[in-house]
Length: 254
Ligand SMILES: [Fe+2]
Ligand SMILES: [Fe+2]
Image 1 (cartoon, rainbow, N blue to C red):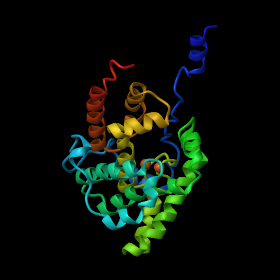
Image 2 (cartoon, rainbow, N blue to C red):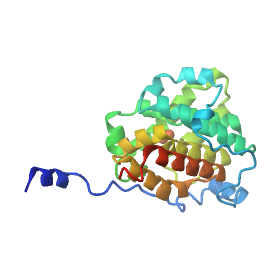
Image 3 (cartoon, helix red, strand yellow):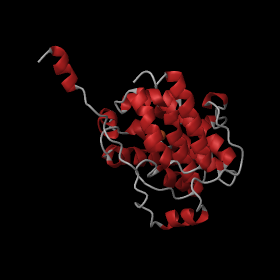
Image 4 (cartoon, rainbow, N blue to C red):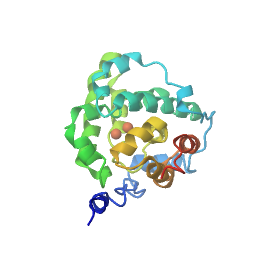
């Protein structure tokens, strides 16, 4: 066997599978049932304007006190890229869904992944991005730790206990729960997924999941687009995908 053959045999022939969300899981929770009854049409049609240009043209604004409070938590797992970009998507989705509580969506999205800074960093990639990652213990741990961060920082910024618990309800399960419990929860989940379609998300996530960019964007289209809950997020994802496929020449470089 030649050296080249030996090398080829060591390279995985297909990337690890992404475990798909199971729409039946948690669907009998009263919150899931109420949300499904309130928004029976899926994806949920937008009631406000939908901006689907590159996310660079509409950064999020405000929440300086909250950002300052979580600077240490932004230094793990590229949160200093992920969190501001998902906040920009969340702000757009709030424009598209004026019925949502914007404060709740924005505070929840800014805090949702801060828990990564308080788990065993060596396990983030080895467990959180391999195989059945949705069920990885480290995923549950980062959600629980994120709630701890929220309970630590929000009271000093003037948020009352009831609001803090609503934030925690969204953070808890944002990756591991299969269905949304409210419009705000849905917009946080969609914003979090939209990051993967931006070129920074493609760069970081494809490397974390061990995929080349062409394989990664194909799988976004096949596996993540069907999980989006809002029509506005769907439009943004499709446009980002088209732009970034073209930018990264993924039809040729594969
Ligand atoms: Fe997360
Ligand atoms: Fe996230």
